[in-house]
Length: 336
Length: 76
Image (tube, rainbow over all chains, first blue to last red; front, side, top):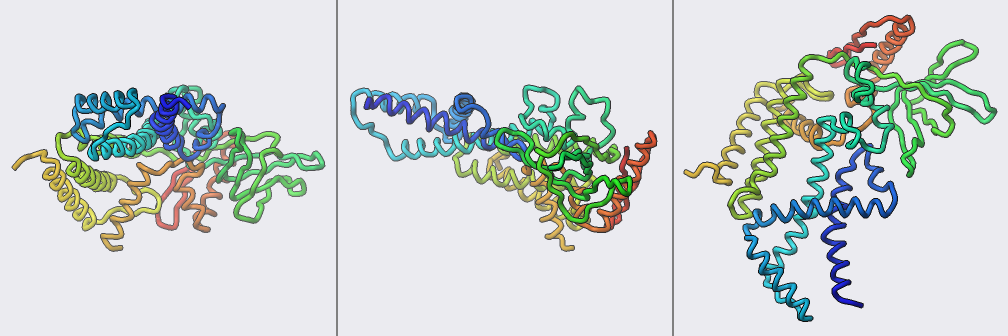
């Protein structure tokens, strides 16, 4: 077997395909996770390769900065490595260089995961998949069942508030060929491997009763309907009246999200040793966390939460200041 | 509720907001309502009243008072 071909194949898989796959694994989350496995094998390889190349470009641009190794050092190391391979010699690698290579492999995989995760978050938080069809995920049912379809340009005029839950009316056909109407609150649904609707789960289900000429409640907690028995479906959204403060909360969340991304990136851009960057990153993350808790405490609490008491607010401010001061000292933002 | 507990709940909520996938069909608010039999009954009844309004071709709002004294204003 030709050594150069083997090495190239190995490098191609490890350097480009693996980070691409990790990127996609973290990009397709929640209701869209099925998209990770769908499509032709060739398509999946090409998209993984493309994502892998993007991840590697960003890794190369940022890694030298993180471990404080100059471009010339990298070039010299790669030249020596290449020359040895061409001469059929075992490359001489110092322990430091080996450590850097291993660290780079871990870094590129971690970066792929982080990029995939945050790209998904940015697209979903800012509703880019609703505004631009290019960003839209394959699972169309999610947009219909969650009511997000109303926020797309096609349905904009029908938006009446925040969708709290979704009710469905389903016309089912039984084995005798008779049809019956069922209704209920949509709790969950599953898709098959082809991303087609497979099963629907309802709570508070009811069915049309011929004798009572109306809907009759079905006792039970979850009513499961195989989609293969459904002839047609009507979707009704339950809207909550939107409050003015929700817009302010959305803006605060967006700002906090941007601060989070900045907090995660900023320490790695500084000219410090790696341990300071890691420690600074951790303290900066906790500063962001307490900052977000403080900001969110001024808005109506989410479900299951209660408004923060004055004591809790004072503790949050104290912790925020402590972590912020620790960050300033560790990252040497202000030199005393 | 102790300060520590309050902070841990808030911390969990903030982390869930930013790191949770939030793609479930039912909103967290309705999940909580469904978990409480009284709230569930009030919510489903309010939806029923809204549906009747809609059938009559009218528009309107229904306020659901939850067991934790929170109010939820629903609309057609």
